[in-house]
Picture 1: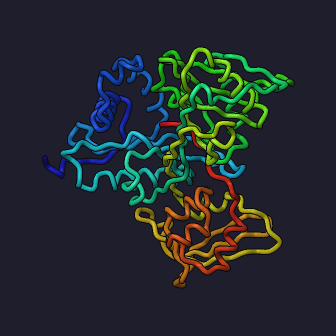
Picture 2 (picture 1 turned 60 degrees about the horizontal axis):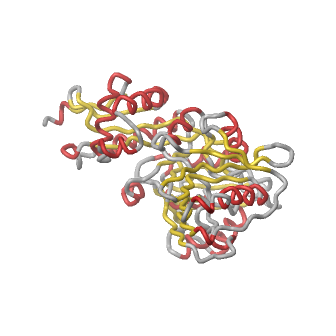
Picture 3 (picture 1 turned 90 degrees about the vertical axis):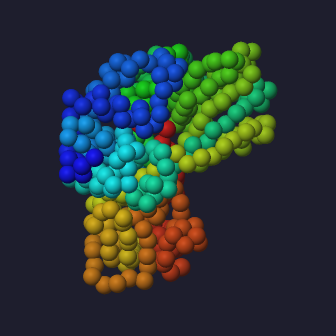
Length: 402
């Protein structure tokens, strides 16, 4: 191997087969696993083709052989009622014989610079290694709660004014229901065709969906599910209010005679057990998505802090393992109406934070007081109190996968 032959450049559609081959090698996707969800090699390539056309893919080439790569999907997310352009990082992989050469670090640096140019000031990813991405500036921003409910633990039917109807998974009703939900849900990805394609990509052919319509015939929530070996599997359940939640669980409970248990996932910070009469169910909380602020001053310029009667200021030093624009001392100013500005300053600061901690704090996953308690944020009690009062208290909901 000659390092001089290695060149970093965009990965075009003509390298699609090499792109997929690298992914399959790195993540050890076997033919058996593909066949279990009804996929064939050509179908994968067809499915990835439109996605790759829209993605920003860059890689390292050894002559004409693709040996390391990352892809960034152009996406949008809701953050405390504001819509942000987001870079969805995926397709990350390097062949083992090219590891420990710094190739991925340079790819991530270039990918982040590209995001910054495209005004994607926040980045999401589903991590294969949390420690690795933490070292590169990402941090956990959301959880997934997996649960198991025995058939006798299912909630009893409660009357609701609306009704549940099964719909096609590729129908517009499902997309419209999610679009309404995402608009008022912090952290949610606004799904376009690309995001929906990724959402469904590895699902079984027999997956089903049902929507709860309120008494005005408006969609207020949905459940996506399949039934196999007497188990009711819930891929996702969303609802805009308690009425829709109750109606959807009525629908699940109506399958009582067909199933032995229900297994599913929810993506909020609210355990399901408390809402059930028999709360002794099995629940497992695990980290799900990671996030990273790409350009701190630009991110803050759009960020909705909580309104207050006075102007607030914070001087601090921040570290970032990759991007220079997030390194050094900053002055954060928050206007009485909640608008923020952040500007570099020359003076040294006693208060200290990393881009990882700043991301998880501003995304609402962890509170300032907790981050200070565990040593991730160095600031006075007065400053911690100001931050607590300035940042909305809501954790991100992310049910996507890409």
